[in-house]
Image 1 (cartoon, helix red, strand yellow):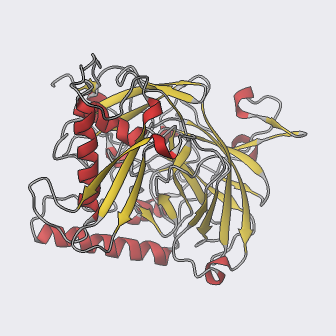
Image 2 (tube, rainbow, N blue to C red):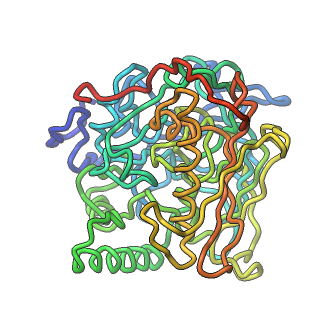
Length: 464
């Protein structure tokens, strides 16, 4: 962009600005450029519904980097300016990058997963202001539709290198891997995990409102406390990602002084928090409603990290079927809802859309809070869930799959996880069930040795 200032760049393969500060005189894009609905607009930005076309509140351009565009940000902070404003009851589209901003390719190498620059993630679309929303209100966000772009009918599932970030089974699968998924209407298939096909339950991994300055301060204090505690005890765990200037982006209309505050204080987008955020609730799909607390005037709604499908828990971290796409929303406001509902965290009402597999068709595995070394833990649901996943993976190896393939599948397919018991001392009990009917062969337990099939391979790095 001709009016962009010169900024230093990261030396990583996908380069992000160390800190993108737009020109002070760069004004907020006008409503006519951000809010669509004009005769000259690209047809893919409009979908006819009733008598009027639906407006596109946030548009993205795949020919430009995410950090060159209006309506994109990767931190939570109340000083990030609204990129668009909508009225209660207005239906609108928001276009979204995949969570990495386009760093992952449709190929057979996991080098891009290994080399991800996580300083800039997640790339979210927003914030969108909602007229009339005030702190203490509840913003009701109705998800009317979510679709991949017609010219990008694919997604991916990955496992990061252990050093880059934790996943449920990183002790067993510490190196980057990847599977590419092709979308065929409502179904997904993968050349990297053959003999599997299932319908997608498309949903946003991230949906949230902007925090107030007070709430943001609470987040930063408590997350720094747990981070510093683990540093003090020399823990190897990465327990929190704290605010970091490198890679910060807050749209291209923020003035330099406010940008400096965002870079210093802005909360990372990795965890869910009181405002919503990265909850990764797979049933928050078409027809669903999210009830989000409002902390700033106008709410400041942002969305991203779209998933074509996901297993409960998204256990591999980069583990849903990640995609770029368009989400269609409608917002309403419940005045003073936070107080009236005694709301500390969001509520959700799942929609009517879901893959229908009979309850007798989920092959289900149990885990208890006794780890793989036989050590007893006290009511530890995390360890119990890990044990259930490990049991399932070992079972499916008999058919010819690698552990890596099933790990990717558990994170991306419509598997169901439950806490069966959480009070029967000393063991918690969790379960994970996988639909038998997503496979084109019989997976049920039976007597006799099973002849393994050629299941190909997921994508590894070139150094594997």
